[in-house]
Image 1 (spheres, rainbow, N blue to C red):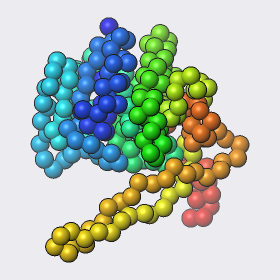
Image 2: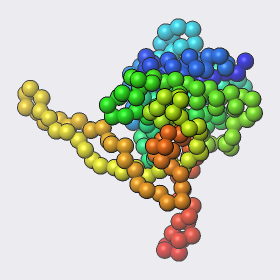
Image 3: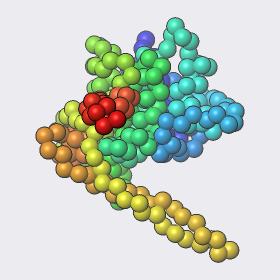
Image 4: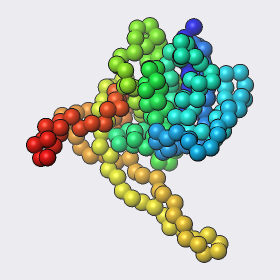
Length: 259
């Protein structure tokens, strides 16, 4: 039986995580190790300044108190698996919200997949895009996400993972019912429009504090390429191959001449 390791960055009790478990249980032996609390936008961070504890909630279902998604993968391989018997695949999600464009660098969901491929394990990060009013998840749930991840994992288990080492699949699900989805589309990561919105408030004692605002899902036009933003906007499931080599290869020669 295939071994599937699941984590997320929304916490062990996230509805997206539980939907993912439900979708993948028929396909293999599922082990869940997830953060105790929400760790959105924690990036590829490891906890180095305090000890961490596994808390077993039920058989093969753990929360890591108080770890990041990267911690969850790193320590799962230490405690629950052996070097000779690693998971066959790691799935991170289903994230509540998009992970597209440069947001991949912030994403705890994507970072768990990064850690998996660094450890030589195929990985997929999956996120459910939703409208700002939250109506899409309320109305449609995670059915399309469940169908999509099951399709991808079945294909991987019956064939092979389509990417070489140190690369993972970043999947985003459009906020539509299954009947309105047009299928899968292979995309590149787009360029998001970023702002710096933050709200300033004062506590009852007059001390000032800031709360970083939720960014809008806006992107730049990219001629000649189909991006994750465009695919989602056109009701496709976006599948983006992501690699961890952040070198700007196109600029190496030019930089050498400049130096």
